[in-house]
Amino acid sequence: MVSKLFIFAFCLPLWGAKFVVLQSGFQLAVDRWEKSGEQILIYREGGILTVATSDVVEFIEEMDAPKPIAAVIVNAQAVAKPEAPRTDPKLVIVEMAEQYGLPAKFVASVARTESAYRTDAVSAKGAIGVMQLMPGTARELGVDPNDVRQNIEGGTKMLRDLLVQYQNDPDQVRKALAAYNAGAGAVAKYGGVPPYRETQNYVDRVLKNYQGAK
Image (tube, rainbow, N blue to C red; front, side, top):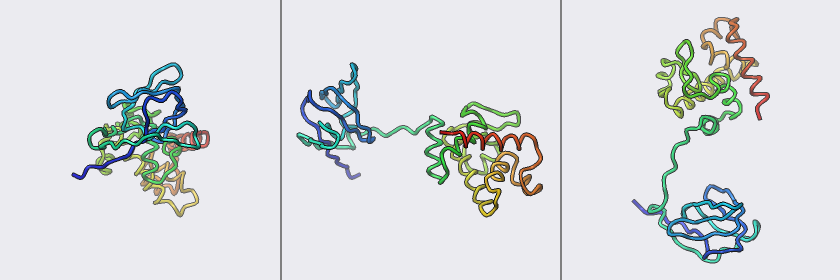
């Protein structure tokens, strides 16, 4: 495997540094910093934040004028740690919504209505987890409904496919939501949102959550 080398610009303990730039893109205001082995100790707001040297891009005195003093080559293969997959439902929703081309607020509104984002939610009919996937539906989607990431990915993909199915219909969104709740067969049978109180209330709640989402 070919090792990847990244150049991280940082200097000796610098008391006058104003900001630290991290690999994640965040810029933190700091009072001062120190290097301790393979870690950087950042002093800010009366506390100490410890980060790996591989997570630091540079220290700068002004936000618009980066002034790195020295450059050190760090072997990324030796110090980088793989990022753990996100398991917070709200973060996974944002990730999967982007992956499947849907507004994150829309997917979040469905998840909120389905389970209030609970991974342990199980409905009376046996629907599982955040997106409330039925075991049979999960098998068709090829996901494990008990795995939060797969559960949300399966639900998001199902929403995307239903929206595509009704894309030429003026009532596209309501029909897609109704099909997610009651099945596409029920929507086809009644030519729209079926006359089930549960499904009608469900569609209204999702749209209300979506319109009120921030």
